[in-house]
Image 1 (cartoon, rainbow over the protein chains, first blue to last red):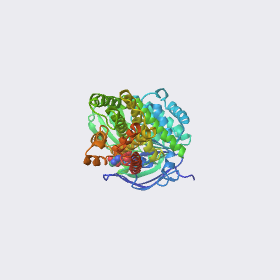
Image 2 (cartoon, rainbow over the protein chains, first blue to last red):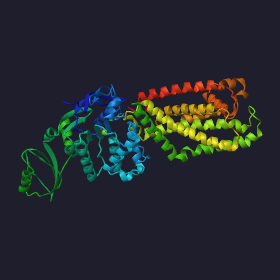
Image 3 (cartoon, chains in turn red, green):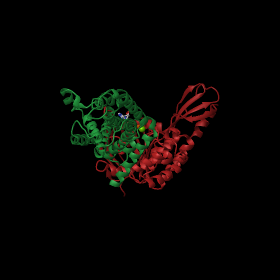
Image 4 (tube, protein in one colour):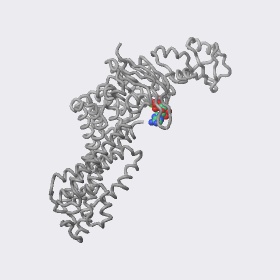
Amino acid sequence: MSVPALEISDLRKTYRGGVEAISGISLQVREGEFFGLLGPNGAGKTTTIGVITSLVFKTSGTVRIFGIDIDRDFSAAKRLIGLVPQEMNFSIFEKVQDIVCQQAGYYGIPRRRAADRAEHYLCQLGLWEKRNVQARELSGGMKRRLMIARGLVHDPKLLILDEPTAGVDVELRRGMWEFLEDLNREGRTIILTTHYLEEAEQLCNRIGIIAGGRLISHTDKRELLKKLDRQTFILDLNGPVGEVEPFDANRFTIVDESTLEVTLSRDHSLNDLFAHLDRQGLIVASMRPKANRLEEIFVGMTQ
Amino acid sequence: MIGEQLISLASIARRETTRIFRIWVQTLVPPVVTATLYFLIFGTFIGSQLGDVHGYDYMSFIAPGLIMMSIITNSYTNAVSSFFSSKFQRNIEELLVSPTPDWVIVLGYVSGAMVRGLSVGVLVTAVGLGFSRIVPHNLFFILAFAVLTSFVFALAGLINGIFAKKFDDISIIPTFVITPLTYLGGVFYSISLLPDFWRVLSRANPIIYMIDGFRYGFLGVADIGVWTGLSMLLLIGTLLFAANLYLLSRGTGVRS
Ligand SMILES: Nc1ncnc2c1ncn2[C@@H]1O[C@H](COP(=O)(O)OP(=O)(O)OP(=O)(O)O)[C@@H](O)[C@H]1O
Ligand SMILES: [Mg+2]
């Protein structure tokens, strides 16, 4: 078997000031994988990525990129990684094209080739028309795409994206997903953090979940989704409710006079639920999941 | 490997240079205006009432000092503000995640600062030529002192930029250290005219050596030996370069 694209063992990070952001994470990402790193705010995702990309000094543990130990030869490892950070980190006064070309230069790519690469990725990401515009004139979504183009310009084998679709509208998000899927299909290993399970579900083959600086799950996507055995729904009814009969063992909570909440386990179908309500003369006007499913997983796992 | 590092160095230097000429109204114009005022007030209005120094009229005597003063200030200011702005906008991370070694990062920012310092130096020289009849006496010393001084102050500015946490931190050292030392560094007077105590004390001010050596390049007269000055600049430059490398290797101000 080939060496893992990323291998982290017992990684720890305590920031100056004493915050322990990572408390012993070990994980592997295989070459060619599309890996999702999920976890609530403050879990330690960005810190982990920071260590891998040299922006954060680790306190202890080892990190290997395609077998290269970052303590031995960080520059060799850096050549293989492309980073799309969570927060904007380019100079807003520079031109879009310059930002991408310079980045290629920092990796030692000659100017002519840098310009070709920049053109290629700016076109692919729909930014070519904006190439001569100062970065501050880009919209939020364009800025994200600029950072993706910049992260790819040196053709890294491992692309790490820290919440690339935060604040990006639905249509654009789908476009980005397709773009990332294509990159992965071409053989690039991708690590992505996100708060949207839908995104991880759509893109990733394997998913790691961290919370409080620890890896609490590291599995195949399907395994993870199997754990999602219950879901809470909010039901808006046509008209007021008085009392509702429990549905098997599932109790209804009356939120207000025409709104119900119910948590269903996998073995109940929605049809049964509706039939049950129908028998009591209650009409459901609309229904929505209470929490994002990822939150339900977090809640389930941290309990 | 070294080829790649040179490409990286060129990329930083090009970016820095573009920045300087993009915001030329902030970077190149003010120093020229300031120097013109100095020439006008000290050289023309006041100088006309003063006698010769070292056998030169006062305007010619202060011209090299004023040029040097603008090289010093602008090299320093450019390094500190450009590096601080890279931290503030976080685009320093573009370099940190790349394989670019620390010495290239230092040289990249320093070369930008030197482009600014020396461009301003050339502009101020051009202004000076409109006021005085200075002619180069020894081009080697002119260039050597200009380039090394610019290098030293760019490195010093970079250290300031590495430590700076807020905008105020950019201007503290220039205001309270560099400007006073420059004024006391013999721009406006020859230290040989000072009383013993002040003359000896002045020798502790490194800027004295720079201005004195640079002036020698133009006038052919110096208060202190020019070779002493050059050796000193080389020594300070080496120490500051090492200090920058040390700070970056520890991640000071840029990595957590
Ligand atoms: N530079 C820093 N100095 C001190 N503490 C920090 C620093 N950066 C992050 N932390 C702390 O480390 C912990 C982990 O933060 P991190 O940014 O890695 O979380 P995250 O999983 O990326 O969260 P989010 O989903 O909100 O982006 C948090 O408690 C945070 O406050
Ligand atoms: Mg984060």
